[in-house]
Length: 474
Ligand SMILES: [Ca+2]
Image (cartoon, rainbow, N blue to C red; front, top):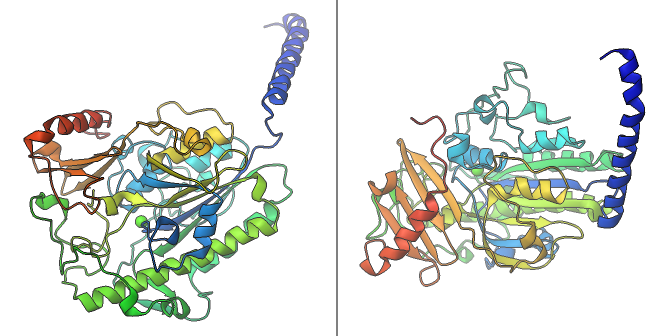
């Protein structure tokens, strides 16, 4: 284009820009959209099942998370897409099923497989948010370093290759007792850093995206002494189907309960006495996390940020505490392996204090935040926004939750609707199970071979057709 053409076009371009601005301004006024997008505060907890007062567990002390739930919509039946840290978080942070991410274990960084995908914090960074991280958001040692203005973990190979750094997890069933308030522990420090992030973000022109990930109650169970003292040993309940070692219930596939525990009682039987001590330590550890959540949320209030900040609280997968003799999560497609706490408080949108009984997938978090913040939707995600359920927690919602597991190169698949829970391994060649979630919430009776339920089984398998094939598989 020569200069004269350019100068002839410029006034028209200016007119177009002015018109677009006018249209956008009218739209903003008409929709009542705020001038500044809402802030986002994510709080994650590692290996936290729905062992919380707000989820109806009697005896456990979680006053701060319970208070947060009263100011949020509490999703009562929220399911992760994989019962293990890295695959679950990779799914959540991309809004895609684990078979689409291809991340099915703890030893692969998402960014290495999909350097072209924007992870949740990266997308918010690209759209003008100041992104600040503290603690475990991606899997321990892995991080999308480029996605954070501050708090990204350094990587041995630099940032350009998006390889992630590595760290050997130190799992153990020893119990760790801290002194004082636990000030020396990483989780206490993570909360302190989150509070610092909030304080320095107040008054900024840019909205913030603060992600605070606590590493507890992941093994080893860890808490200050004062939280152990909350729980007399005989007050800690044990499940009805407690067993000394992993034990599939009668009539269920062997694969439904992997033979070896991955976190606690690794390679050894659990006595009931020791099991009770470990569960008490888990409860103490949950109360420790609760105290840190309380510190961060109190800072949000004290800084006057609550009214323009979306708060999300989430556990990265479920956890067995002796149910079916299992003391871990990996490989569990059971209710206790997949169901997690999921709270969302969106000022001006969410029906705070209400509970949604609807079935939701946790990979909904990314598209929901995008939706709530008015950012452009992302093509290719399987996760869908649940904003409609934030507005009306009992709205009609017929989308089932799908999850997968992967052990010994066998893919397990789970789907649940409001009534039914179906799972199979290797497409059914390694067994399958069907449970009536209403009549049998503890999951003790396998109906999959009952001819009277053949039609239900067929319907559940039909839902699983929505699951993408494993990325990279032939
Ligand atoms: Ca975890």
